[in-house]
Length: 95
Picture 1 (cartoon, one colour):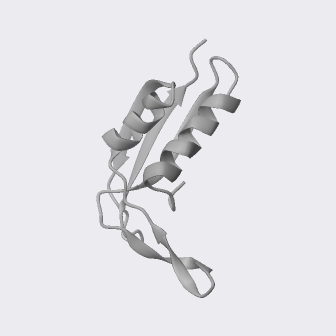
Picture 2 (cartoon, rainbow, N blue to C red):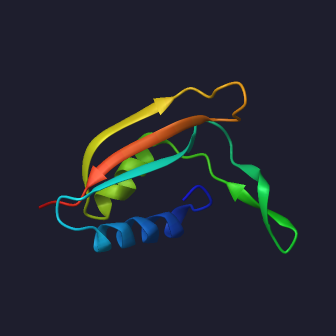
């Protein structure tokens, strides 16, 4: 999910909502609080993939727009070896 934005992120959220069983949880982790950056490890045709920096409220909104219920969300500061803070959103498919 860290390489998606815009329509791709919304489409992934809708697909997650579609395949989850009623009441099933979804934990979505991502980079947050920094600018987008080229991947250190992944490339397509020699071009690094972009690692997206997403805001926690924006991801929560994408998931709720897809029909999921927000359970919890949070942000952990970046550790010394990390480039960005780590966001997390826990949602579930309604029963």
